[in-house]
Length: 283
Ligand code: GLU
Image (cartoon, rainbow, N blue to C red):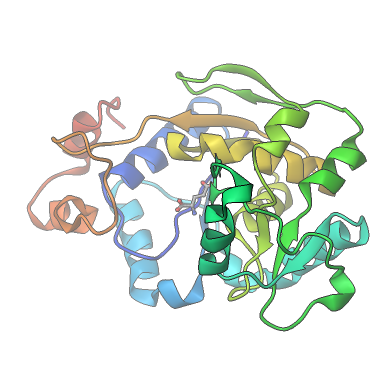
């Protein structure tokens, strides 16, 4: 069993991150597996070195350790480009020059009907579908052409296993599910890759067997399973855990400084108290 915790250094870790890291750690320990840390820093402008340093400090304080070197996604761009080139070669991608406001405008046009939402927000209306990769211009994003994907799959149903409490079981991904994902962005115009592509490439490259993460990412999992299939990569077992909420039931966000682990630590809270507060067994 190889498990990873994969935070983005865009803010201080809070109790929700602690929960995710500790659940993954406990699972790896229970099975004699390995726990890896991966820094997901593709969104360079939003990432900061001091947040990355704080991740190491907070996790060590919680009692975790991990093998070196720690993979940083910013150093893995060549691998993401290779995966993108492979999908392009399969005829499954197209370049897209639409801005967010172009997409909003196209979606509000009467003939488009009600905008449906996918895991990444409103479904892309397909304005640039039909452009060829040869027409790619600097500043274009690259999208996955779900119609071409459906043709490629020819009715084949994909599947993954989930072990998290809410959605436990085997999940099938058929043609209607794929259509419901929309033409997702594989490479953003600004960073040249995307969360979906990078996470799939790296989970496979690191031999991750179990993906442990928050329930908010359950809806994105069919995208990951699809990309794994298209790229000839194995599908790990997924475990989406509950989200940690504040006393008003709101999901914790990185801007909630009061619940940052660094703040709690400075207030004298111990790692054992953090575990108790999160309903986790003593470490
Ligand atoms: N980097 C993502 C985050 O911080 C986690 C991605 C994942 O676990 O798949 O939300």
